[in-house]
Amino acid sequence: MGVGTNDAVAGASTRSARSAAVAAVAAVAVALLAGCTAGASRHGVSHVGPEPTAMTVEDGVETWDLTVPPSVEAFGIDTDVPGGARTRVGAYASESGGGRPVRFLLPGGEEVRVQATQVIFDALDNAQEVTDRSGEVVLPEGRLFHLRVNTVPVEGAEAGVDGYRDVLEQLDLPDTSVGELQEKIAAADSVDPVDASQRVSVGADVAKTDGLDFGPSTSFRPNDEPLRFTLRLNGAWDPIPIP
View (cartoon, helix red, strand yellow):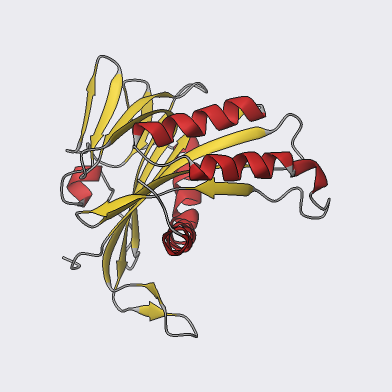
């Protein structure tokens, strides 16, 4: 399966919009997990939210079935939030620094397994469409479900490239972005010191199926010594009507 220039640009745009939409919610969820007193603990995982119907644990592997229609029940998203809150979160964090094996089943038949430290779902209720100055839709109307998965960071260029390539192979994605990652690693020493603390990233996208955009990305800071890579999985569903 190949990726053309237009597809690559569109994919990058999708990932950028997706990241902007979930970043703030992910930060809130991380804070909740770090100091959670009301969340549950099961299978070595602390979580905020009710028991999800789309998740099972067998032989120590946490499996999320993303082929089901998105819902607060499926993803264990907490709806007991203050009145007027638009965003609701379901978040699951490993109780040890080494993470735990988590498997995701995708609508197109693909599946991917990673050593995850955090699995964060959110549901954002948006009463009306939001556009930017050019008229492009930034936030569609409806209930928007997002997923962000953080994995155990690895050190060293070889480990970073190998980990990213492994996920691409699991998802049957082309390795075009591996070459892009290697180029950015090679150029790390020449990055302007002013910009060297900013994360450099590459990513790819699985073909959208049943309204789910899904893809892996990896990033590093050029001034890290040794380089430290953070692999993430991100998902975003087409909006559904607000109940």
